[in-house]
Amino acid sequence: MVRHIPYKADEIKEPSLRFLNSDSTNPQDIVRYKPYQPQPISGKIGLIFHKNIEEHVNTMLEWLRGQNNTWPFREGINSTFGTRFQFISENYEQFDLSDIFSKMNEFDVSVIFLPPEHSGNDSIYNEIKAKAVFMKKRVQVINHGEFLNKFIKERNNAAKGVFILNFGVQLYTKTGGIPWIIMDKYNYPEKFSINNSLIVGISFIKVKSEEQEYISYGVSQIMNLYGLTLKFNIFPAKYDPLRGYFLPEEVMKELISNLIEQYDIENLYIYKTSPFHTEEKSGIESAVSDDLTYFATHVKLSGFSVRCYDPRQENYCNRRGICLINQEKMKVILWTTGNAELRGRLKKHVLGTPKSIELNVKTNRNEDNKEEREDMLKHISFQTLALTKLDWEHAMWNVRTPVILKYARRAGKLCRYIYDSSMVSDDLKRIVERFDVRDVM
Image (cartoon, rainbow, N blue to C red; front, side, top):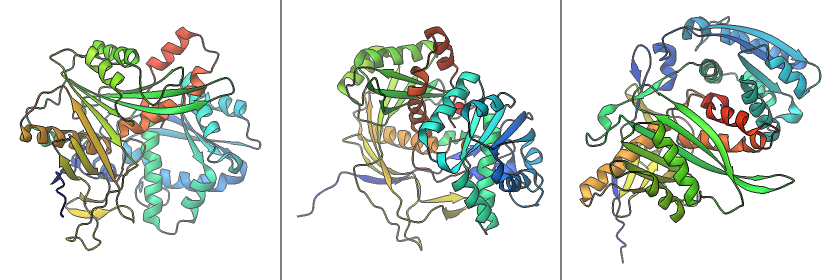
């Protein structure tokens, strides 16, 4: 007996990025078309490292300054990106956080190379990030053993170029630059407004300390995906006691109500890493008015196994954007990794079978027609695919998780260090209100 599966296959077009001089589907074309933000950005960049790796750090600086005439910064990052960066090296003999924080005061952006004994230590990483927020400074933390060894020992100059390009994009972003924005208005059905829209991501973290255990959550928000990013702020929050990976009704209502009060919006998109609890749905519905449409999407990243193969391709790898739509259950299985069309040809970024993600959508938009429901799911699928390309932490195009959830999770991780501090409530509130995605990159 053959079981009928109510899914319809479709393909979402690869979202394009807008740079200063042109559009492209490939983030690496930032080198050709220049960053979106036209004015030059100045910045004093401090490189803080153990004296034993000074030679390796200098090699990285040669690539950034274009002293080896190799892609991507053949003429140097300042000439390529139109920046005015000044690089200053500071080394240390013993790793001491108080000394590190003192050195950070001297720079606009600090790049801290952790010694081998602390490489990969999330506690040290988050403590440095949280302290930088309090200091109103931007910081990039590098596991120097893993990063530098791979960079220095890599024989392929193209692979080295990708490493240093990602590094350069981070520096550009952390000094306040906007590397690119998303373009592709024609991919939205006309009935869905792309203006006056707010996109919100919520991710949960379980935090344990000596005194208590609680669920913390991070929230990221972005305005106007298809024009200039008006706002991409994140803020961490927590609630107690431990109840589960959802927001109680009153917490969700307050969160959504506060966001609606700040902006004049017609559409609200909420992405979440766990299923929407009945309390959360009640909280959302209590906060939104009848003339505001909301889409609540649970992005499921694990717990299921779906494979897709494309016999038309030599490597049998499917394309990014392939999706299976179930309009009856308002569900989509979407591939955000795989082959992508870059400059008119397909390219695969990594080896292996691409994993899909699952989107479960709930909305207050009353669409009984099957075609209408299908259009809604295509609309959410394209937005999800586009959100994987709005990550200013690197110039990679084959990204699985929507950026709105990635940085919400990062914000949640900082909760322990921010809320367990000795800051008084008014000071803490001001810090959280100005929290920006660049603070956790």
